Length: 360
Image (cartoon, rainbow, N blue to C red):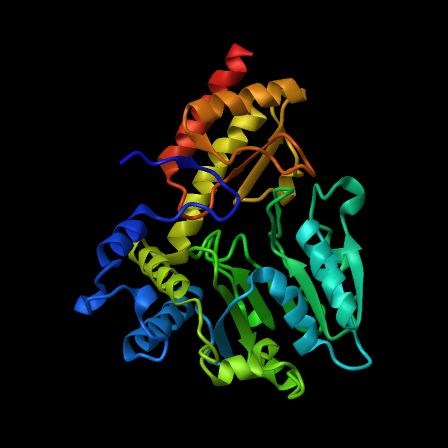
């Protein structure tokens, strides 16, 4: 079967092994005569899927016992609201670091709930870099500090993290979770939509320190209350059962190839190929992000003008490359090389970039 050379920013590529297993089980999961999407979420079979998915995520990310793992709906965008609803204390302020469009949206939603402010930003340079830690460390005196660890639109990523802040660190890891090891204990809360590195759209992972659950007020709507979701093991209402199942399969795949450490090595190798094609082009390709802030997930670059970019994208599409157009905020091109994008697809893209440059 022909497979696209998929560089979409999200929803994004899934591992072929995951798709093959899901195809095999689609109509007959564990000899039940029905697929996972037909199971009751109260059945022992789905509860086993839910529990195994949690266990795998705990194993791969080395999540301590004093953290809850939740599978919620609404995407990362709903977390822009749930985080301040649950964590913003009365009379306090929430601090945000702006590194792109998604952190801007997170701040805007928080300001609808209570007092929230940006304490650092790289907007003045069109988000080409991550603000220096000297702008952040020791500064927040608030309920929490929010960051977006990877910025898909601008191709930047945090490589060092705030430490001297004395408040819970909240991180939107939607586009780089599971791509590299993290110290979960450094965070109060981590959230991530699944559709880039974890699975299909429909489920959002939340990892929260149990101490922070005490901030969830009983008068919050039940569906938006972290404590309610934790008490019900993410089964307060009908969850996105098929998405959770796919998440389980992706986590099984990640474990089978060597875990997060191996994924990081693969991601570094893939990113190095494309950044090398950019850096060796003598300015034919220009990366958007500053080198010390470059993302391993989203490689953004521009060409000399719109006509050349259009020609590049047209030829790429003719060769089977999908999803290479840059976001309108930056223009140019963007290659999203999440965990499931095969190395050989990135090799083909790097070769095409070099060939196109030589011909133009």
